[in-house]
Length: 420
Image (cartoon, rainbow, N blue to C red):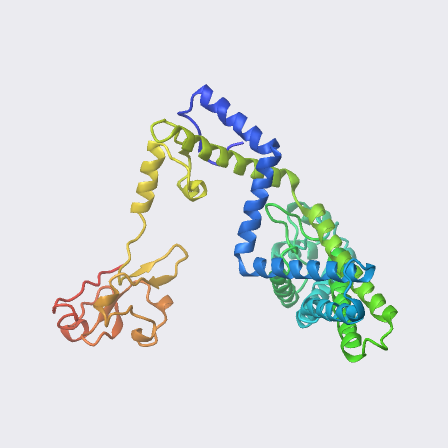
């Protein structure tokens, strides 16, 4: 399955058969699957958060195994056995508290966001039922757009079925809709499993699972605080073993149950066909790269890309002559860096710092423009005096010698500041 916009027009039948065989090998070989897993794990560990989670899980596993071995007698140190077990126990409680107690403030904030999300979900369902509107296509994906035309139709006697045939619209007030979107964005930022709306790879996350997960994580933090309090405040000679064992059991059960619910929600919401297609396209891309490397530069095994916007998606692959020319043309059309104020695709303006040493050795900032925002600079030209101070002039106004300066600090020549 080729990536989107990629064609293999110059490939022979033998080359295509070799590509298909290689893709099948990558798809079914356990060795290749293990290598892909290790590459993914390496990328995960290379990030600070991934490294922290890996080290944390390793420490918990090692100290947990040592604690169990001491309890069953595989590790025996004589009269110091109880003391060693207590040291390991304190270390494990500290590691558990690092996550349970440390994340408690953030989980309180997540609970606050979750309450608003659940509130407006239930309010939407109640209002739609009260207005006799049909059920949403996805019960958990609330519409985010308003339609004044649809509201007028409902007021004029048009039934909800007729209105819903055209589009789904929110029944919340503008303030309520903004609050819902705000809390959804905040919660999704801290929990990657939560999808408030349908995406290209997932459906909206179920609300009931979301509430259950947040509550379980809250109880996990509560039990961890109780465990640390009992362990560190009561001497191990008089502390009942059943007390810490029960609290630890409930804490771990809450954490494990939350993880299981997250996994269930992910399996329910993922679009398996889309993810499978993306996976096969990545395998095909990897197979093309290996075949091109195997045959070398002499073979005509370049790929054709239909859309220039997809050139970045095939990074690392050898392109055909036609695609290479399109890539060079796309790079040539990119604006060069200068001190001009250029219009961007979004309609805003930005000041690029290519010839920055022409003005005091640094680029012109917004402060040097006299406090004028860069968004107000569109359609104007920049004038810099001999002291490096910038000012904005209308595009049809010529800069005076005093404004433009007798020369720059590099040889007395005036730097060019043309219109964007």
